[in-house]
Image 1 (tube, rainbow, N blue to C red):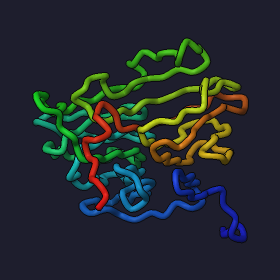
Image 2 (tube, rainbow, N blue to C red):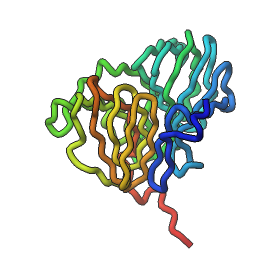
Image 3 (cartoon, rainbow, N blue to C red):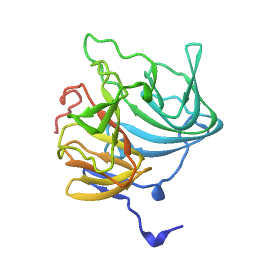
Length: 250
């Protein structure tokens, strides 16, 4: 239904909000019985790619040319790696280095958040290894002592990783303690609840299913509204010097 050209989606120079009524689905190379909603990519100005993959029973993801992070939104995936099968259900996740090529197969109809990024090595450190995890096994930590805002760190706090992925859960009425402005960029997928997001000088109502990209130095703030907790999955580049990939202008 076209809703007479109306949408909550918006594109600005330092951020964008994408809402489900504007999602366009298309398969990526190597996918079988699956399709993708590409939320952020270098074409949009991001230094990473994030998409939601939707898989039928027996569907599979193609291989990635970069390191990959998977977070299961619903359904069940079978991840075949080094002769072992790992079953990933809702809120389970996996980190896959670029050189690893596991088979990712849907045991039932599934949706999975996928983040891909070229790896930035550090001298003297070995690249990170494949691992799987479960969000509920990660102890939540209050953000700056605020028990109403809990953070779960899904990627280990280790300098071998060049990005971070967290979930953040807000009780109704909770908010970030400050407007943040920083060098990291973000990809954010709303998982539950909703609220108000400040991006740049604008304010947006957001709800489960929405995706937000924030460029470096974009002013950002979130406050949760409603009667149920709000939760999102958030990516940021991390643990690398800002000059690591700097190319001087000519």
